Length: 431
Image 1: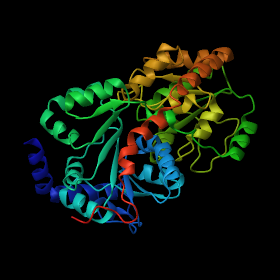
Image 2 (image 1 turned 180 degrees about the vertical axis):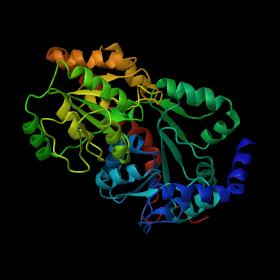
Image 3 (image 1 turned 180 degrees about the horizontal axis):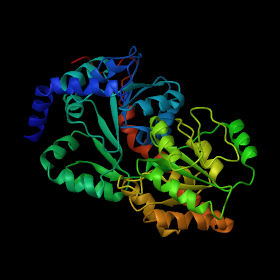
Image 4 (image 1 turned 90 degrees about the vertical axis):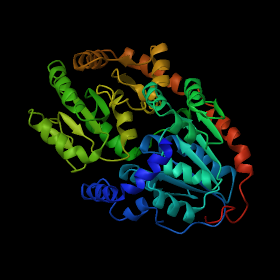
C-alpha cells in the first residue's frame, strides 16, 4: 500500500522534482555536463557481454565496493561493471580509482520513468546494492525484470531500524526483492531479517578490505621536508560546526606549542572558501591547498580543500580526529586512518560505524571525546606523548587487520549468482 502510494506520488510530484533538480544544478550539486544521467539517460554505450550493476550512495560506500569490484574483474575476464552513485564528489573520485572494465554513471532520480529508461538501456545481469541506500522505484523496477539483486555490506543502524519499523510494509516489500542480503555485522543481518529479508547473513564487513588511501609519494616527502619536526594534527572529513571547534582547540594548544600546525580536510571541498573566511575572521593564518597557498612557518591552519588527498594527510599528520562525530551526523570511517598509522580521536556520534568503533573501544585503540574541551585535552595529550601515539596507532592497525578474509567470504557468497551470468551478450532483454 505504502509502496503504491510512493510510486504514485513520485509521478504526481514530477514538476516539483524537475524544479528541485534545476535548483541543485544551479547550486553546483549536480553535474552540468552529465545531468541527463540523473534522468536515466546513458552517458556512454553499453559494453558487450555480461554486466554487473553496483550501486553505492556516495564516496564511503563506493570505496568499500572497490576491492570487491577489482576482485570480480580479475576473476572473471570479460565481465563489465557499472557503478552508480548520486554525488558529484564521488564521481570525481571514482574517475581516478575505477579499474579497467568498470565505469561510472550517475544513479537516476527515483522516478518510475527514469528508472525504466535506465534499466531498459543497461540491462544488467546482476545488481549489487551497497549498504542502505534503498530507492523504491529502482528496486521495484529491477525486481520486475527478474534481475538478481544482492545487498552487500548492508547496514541498518539503530535509528534506521526504528524508523523502518514505522514503514514495515514498504521495507519488507523492498527487502523481499533481494535474493541475498549480506549484513556488515550479525546485528545488521538480524535487523534485515526482522524487517523482511528472506535470506540475510553476516560474513564480514567489506570496509576492512578497503585498500590504503593513495598518496603522491613526492608530495608527501615535500611536505615532510617542509614541516620537519613541527607538531601537527589532522581534522579529517569535517562538517559544519566542527571547523570552528577545531580552530578553537588550535588557538589554545598553540600557547604550549607555538609552531603547531592544524590540518583540516573538509568532507565537502567546495566549503573551502567559507571555512577559510570563518577562520581568518578568528585571527588565524589559513593556507588553502586549492588556491596553491604556501605552507609557511606562520601558517596556523592548512586547509586541504581538495578531493582524493586524505591519504596524503593521514600519512603526514600521525594524529587524526575523525570528523562528522562532534556533530550528530554519524562519524567517518576510522579504519582509513588506522591503516595509515594514525592515533585516532573521535567524537560521541559514530553511529555509522558502530561495530568498528566498539572494536576500537574494546581494544583501547582510540580516544573518544565528548566536546571541544575534551578534544583539546586529547590532542594535547597526544602531542605531548609520542609513546601513547604509537600505542594507539598500533592497536588501531591491529583492529583494521582483523577481517583479512572478508573479501574471500563475500566473493564466495556471490559465486552462484556470478556463475549464472550469461556469457557474451546480456541475458536481459529490454522490457
